[in-house]
Length: 329
Image (cartoon, rainbow, N blue to C red):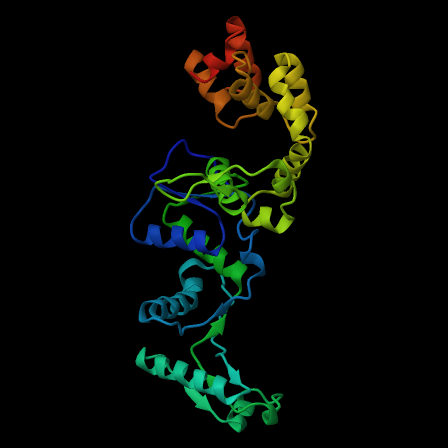
């Protein structure tokens, strides 16, 4: 399902899970043709593949209930439209109450369902057992049956949505990470959650970068929540543990500073060059390993769109001493 990455598109969707594929499906259904979906791995490889696939209709508002009812109707029709089975079936849902307070809550849910025109049945314990014979009726006070609810296979449903989108012109590119937006979002989340409030009045809540020790103590689940991959977070933690040594790079000769930066496991030549230029004023640092940069530089010099790092370095050689300036001009 992978395709060549286009240079531009009217609409770009990041993430090939159930939500991303659904957005692509519905945009193309509305007539949008120039739609590109980017997925860093393969479709459904994130959280969609292990979702429960429950399709419930009742929500707290009429709008949300209508959206959920629409989803159930859509999943029933997708196979006929795309040829891809979704595994959807309306088996109904059966919330039960073990206390009177919970039963009162269920009755309120039933009233909401009737108001929103969702078929519901309030059940006695014996009626609950008719739907689920293994139920111990002595331990419950009642229940509710919603026949229109069901379950779908999240992987097959996502694939059906993706197929429907592609049938109407959407392009899906797998194994393509979107790193620019990720980095900015993760940086903002780190500052918000671990940083300290900035001093003085600010136009909006602002935070100061935390101490290295605070970053080194961040647990793995928090990095995951920020969207930082394990290899990246491990590198950051290693760097924070030697932050004092890295700060000394400002006092070293640039070649020595670059060697010290590169000695941190996980810090590659692109990071060394970017830090060297921004923090140390290295005008000759050449950033290699960037997804777009080599192509842009080679195109600027030759007009060819098939440039790589080696060609870029050859073209920049005459500008030794100022290659970073030329490269990023």
